[in-house]
Image (cartoon, rainbow, N blue to C red; front, top):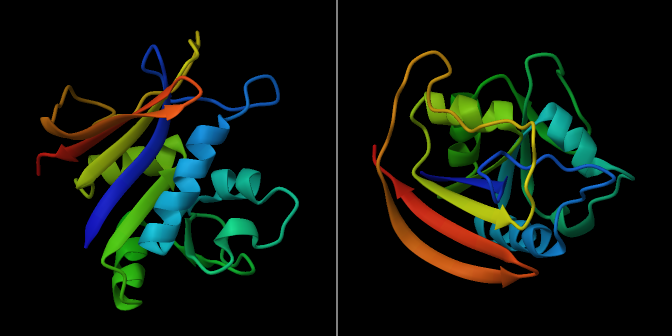
Length: 169
């Protein structure tokens, strides 16, 4: 199964933090919806899912397999809850998916990266600088690196640039 980590980063390299004063760009949101539709699924952490869910309803994800990784929640209506990144991948593979889209947040991204479970990354670089932020890490405790190969680079509009890399495994 191919795994694609999808994230929005700031122009200074932080993991983009969205909020009322700095909402996600519509270009990045539209791209996420397209990527999720193409994969037929996405994997997300509980806190990020709760923020995404907002007013409820299926919206653009009504026909998509949503897998929530949570150590605390046991059931969330309308989605599958698992305890680990590997369990999420196993579930999607059993459902017949050939690609898994890992949508966030930072803890989920870092879990997949640290376990070596990411084949590709898609970074949408937003036209904003943030002072305090989170980083994507392949190892929280030790200096580690992985080479990546650029697969594609394209503007999404609104000043957002998308970088798509293959991750050395």
